[in-house]
Amino acid sequence: MRTFFAGRDLGPLVIILMFLILLPFSLPRIALSDEVQYYAYLRSFYFDRDLNFYNEYQHFAEIGLKNDDPAVSNALLRSDDANPNPVTGKLRNVAPIGSALLWAPGFVVADLWVQIANAGGAAIPRDGYSQPYIVAVCLMSALYSLLGLLLTYRLARIYTGQLPALIATIAVFLSTPLVFYTYLAMAWSHANGFFLFTLFLTIWMRGREGNLGLSDGQRHWSVWLALGVVAGLMVMTREQLGLLLLIPAVEALAAYIGALRRRQWSLLRRLFAGHLLFLAVFVVSITPQLATYWVLNGRIGPSSTVGGKLAFVQLGPLPILVSPRFWDTLIHPAHGALLWSPILFLALAGLAWLFRRDGPLALLLLIGFLGQVYINGAFGTTWHLSGSFGFRRLIECTPIFVLGLSALLAWLQPRLGWKPLVVGAALFVAWNVGLIAQWTFVRTELRRGLIWDDMLWYQLQVPLQILSRLGDILFNRCRLTTNC
Image (cartoon, rainbow, N blue to C red; front, side, top):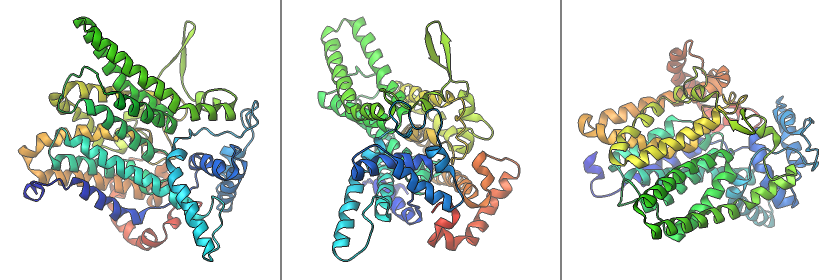
């Protein structure tokens, strides 16, 4: 294996080949209420030039009702105190607009293709609902996932050889919910958010390459400009990703303290100018989201439905966000992220090995990860994500997991060789594939949470179940789900 990789970096090629091999098993569709809300921005603005989502919601609700699934209708069309919004009269949309912005290039290409095809005699509805539009946005999500994997591999290569970085990248991808939200639940925001955070981390770490360890926090103005734009897109794709900005914020705080102690006033001025540029660009970048909030909710803030899910305690005049489900997010028997994806135990433990090489980075990545766990634990009523596959709210932390796991594998490789590492990774992948099969068509009760009774028996039955449904898996995956 070492001889095969010697002198050439084949990691990106292997990742692309893996991605393309799995792509035919994808399921491009929009059916669930979250997917509909992400997509509604793009379709409504492009075709209707407004943010009135009634026709989009009605279209997808009717598809659900035809399949005896009223979920979209109940979630998006049912009236309550906040729907339609009493101030604006607009129907509720709790999704941010970032995914729609990222999907827009594919959507426009699909629309051009429909017009060309219709000019040649085809009769494809040019309405934003027909299959070319749906396929386009789903493939855009898959493409962003691929780009995120390639960037993640590149980050891992800063610290390890090709083989540990490649095994870690592929293992984390196939052993966590990311693979599910790349190929089967394509019209969600997780693949997009994963790409954006990995891109942010890649740009931010440019100032640290060749200077691993404690950084003085300086970046070229162009880096701060790029970071501001990407940070804005991150927050507009998933608002909670804003907590990942703790990574550069803590680095900046340490840099300010160090500069003050050393009385490096010129460094302080350069740091302040760079951070001011970052903040200015970030605010400008999120302006589309703020304007959308105003149009939909009558205020510069998300729907009250979102805020109503978060747990606060009053500390004097200040409401403090608390996280009563912090530990449950990680280790709850039915919903814990570390039980859905056991490879994350090793990935997080691997940060200790990364610490040996780059202590400040390992600590900063851990802070970013804990921020995501904290905000999930603050969702008092929906922290468990029941109904979703796996613990999807931590998908965006994938580069953190890969960096940790690759550091651990780099330490293990000279002691064990590469074969045990590949076998171990394959076992974690098999566990995740088994859960996907159970969740999808073998034991659908798993959609309410992990069921440990007879878990091993069901996991061992998965290969036989896959063989029995191989025709549907290959040629008619709609039979394995709903509203398709």
